[in-house]
Length: 135
Image (cartoon, rainbow, N blue to C red):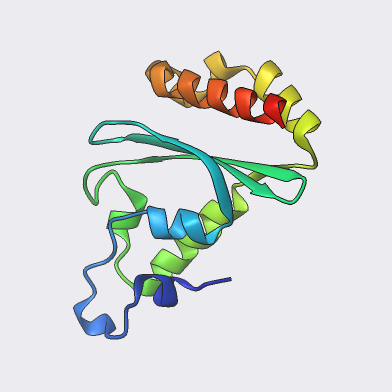
């Protein structure tokens, strides 16, 4: 696994400003087949990964400042690494497409914290199901 220090290319921690882009981190977790991010100053990112016949789902929120965004709040590269580990460990893996399809079709999306912004959520779910059923 790529470390945060390698990924964000920080050699001198004396002048640590911290990264503000999750994408390198997300890309380092595996092969992204679908990604839908909220188009706002704060919101969620939704990612579907594929590893062989397995599929992984990651969804997390982010904000516009260090008071509401975990990555921007990191004060050193060790905290960035902790966040990377936390996000990677949050990926929900499905053994095959059938298991993933069942989850995305039956999950109580209205009960999730991010349902208020259901436009992008619905787009993501629709894309995932179309992709998985097309395999």
